[in-house]
Length: 177
Image (cartoon, rainbow, N blue to C red; front, side, top):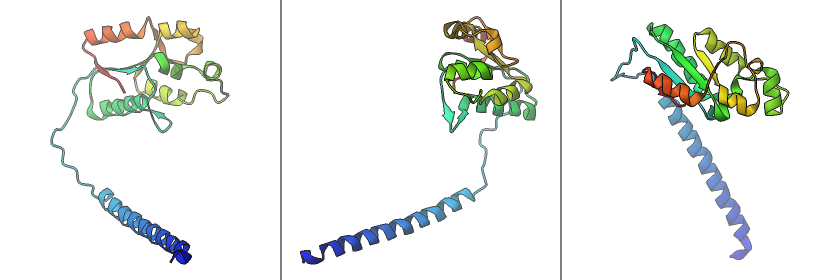
């Protein structure tokens, strides 16, 4: 009986592998059916007439290579146009995410790379859409950066925490992506 044990192991492996392929194929077919369902019923429609929002960009969070906060600022700015929403969007970069507002030269030095700032076009696009991008003055001082190290259009505040408090007191809604 033990003489053919290797043959049984090989046969069992074939069965499990073949079953796995069949199961994955069935799962793929089910996934395609789920993706093909386009109907969504909205129970709570949202239309913002006025909204002042501040994005607290104090940590690193990504979807692939895309910073989630930058993605959401872009989506919200597009909704403001689509819905004719009145108000402002401000993105405050500080702490571990402060480097995202650096120009190519400063970015390369800080990150020890030669690629330039991969977020510069995204941030320029946000500024073009009317989003105010701010860098924390305290983060700049800690990292020994000057205003000339920042991307064009980036404003410097005294300190991110104080600025967030100030905006909250003015009625801004804080988003922490």
